[in-house]
Length: 287
Image (cartoon, rainbow, N blue to C red):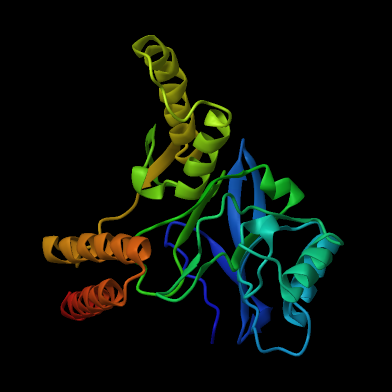
């Protein structure tokens, strides 16, 4: 199988047997919003890049049609293997165009926000994963973001909240600097400072330009690192300080390798990631 769904014990879920395939699985989860109970179908889908047919797959088309005809809420997490600037990719491919054209004929909308890569290797960083919601459920979806820490996979973990689905404790809203969209940060500052003088020769002029510079930096940070509400999940019993340190080291080496593009730094990152993965697997086995 290339698709799966993990459901927490606190949720009531029923598998949809007609939508169990190698590259697609779907479950109906009971939710409550303002006293109104409603099922939401959650789907995990994989769209193979080597398929001779344009995306999405027939199985995903059938599920979207099934839910649309019956007015059933639907959320799809999808490894689309498709690139389109509409959902943050660096370029648009034929697969990306085909998928977007199909979505335009349905009631499904994109939940993706920003352009942080969802697929990350030492040779490629791109947005090829999409999250889809029907128009009604889209109003209940918030906080969509790509997590930057290692996920032990080429794909980054994507998190978001659907109102009425979570029973987790809510923590105060805050900014997470590790989740900053640095491309957006730089572009925001550049647009704010466009037309400003590059060199200043008088102290008075320097003082006058300090305020716009500070405002540009603050605006850039606020735009690229919005306030998010985090949630407290269950404590992972096998997690340790050693694993946490290995994850921090791997993240730091990835940032360095991404910045320098040097083969030596990429090798350091690969070695640290292998050590991190090994430690996690060992801890899970022993724990």
